[in-house]
Every structure is written in C-alpha cells, then in structure tokens.
Length: 55
Ligand code: SF4
Ligand code: SF4
Image (cartoon, rainbow, N blue to C red; front, side, top):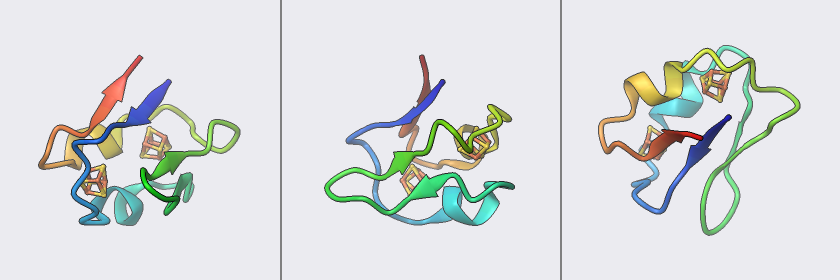
C-alpha cells in the first residue's frame, strides 16, 4: 500500500502520472484512494521529495 506523507510539497506530479487517478487532493495531506490504486509505484518513482512511501 502506498501512502503520501507530510513531506509532500503539493507539486501534483504524482497526480499527473498516476494511471488510474487514485490520488485525491485532500487537506492537509493528499490521499491515495486504496480502492483505485493498482500499486504500480509510479507516484513514488516520480516524487522528487520522497513523500510517497510503501507500507
Ligand atoms: S509528487 Fe510528491 S510532492 Fe508532489 S504532490 Fe505527489 S506526493 Fe506531493
Ligand atoms: S501506486 Fe500507481 S496507481 Fe497507486 S497511487 Fe501511485 S501511481 Fe497511482
């Protein structure tokens, strides 16, 4: 399961690259919708701030 942490700088890159639009702009931290996420890891790969973790 992938998760966005407080290191997020809201650059929106992960939202752009996610193939299934699973990342939601929730406040105060963006959320990955578990029911949509296919665990591809692309968001983690593209995040320049190391804000996406795999747990
Ligand atoms: S790519 Fe990283 S810093 Fe940018 S919005 Fe996504 S989690 Fe936040
Ligand atoms: S792991 Fe893949 S499907 Fe899941 S939120 Fe990240 S980019 Fe989207």
